[in-house]
Length: 234
Image (cartoon, rainbow, N blue to C red; front, side, top):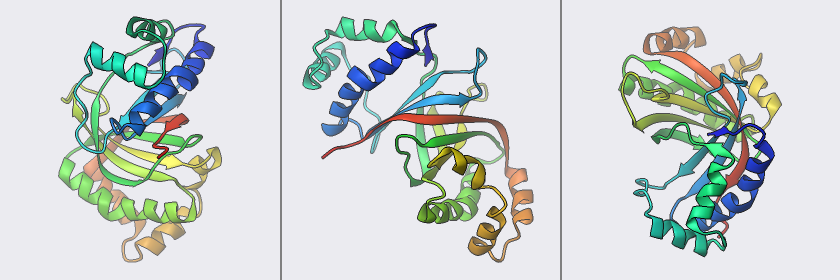
């Protein structure tokens, strides 16, 4: 989503007001399993693809698009007094939707919380199945170890379901979730080699890097902050 010029304060008020109330109701009724609102840190400026990303989680298949009547009923259930048109106008007045996609997490460790920082690595992959197998064998245990000692809050391997094609962005990517700003820089810092040796004592890190370079190339990396996390309260 791109925030309209001069509307950042209004957008933040919307996120922490009616949007949070609406999404919390949807989570508590079981329609969805959670929502994250992410603010882009880098890249920034006028060339940034988006200012914010809204991520909706489902425990299974995503729901079909809601009809106007269903949306109006959901607003009422959430205790929002606005009409459907007023609700839509409130959104249109502060933000423009620039991209929408459906994605599947094929591997996951932990989860993001409010205040976390997220690094997204867009990948060019030679063979998807081999890439996922390599991530599961070598990188999932690394992030599981990091989650145990609090160095990270989570990690995921994500494959975009729709849209998909050679010209579509973000079709395959990893998500690294860090508990604070320092952790973004520290996790792969000087102590990382020791973590690697602890988890993979029989596999030199240089050998795995050489193998990984045959499977995948990082095309783009972005850094975002979790400014809202809406989870079940029951």
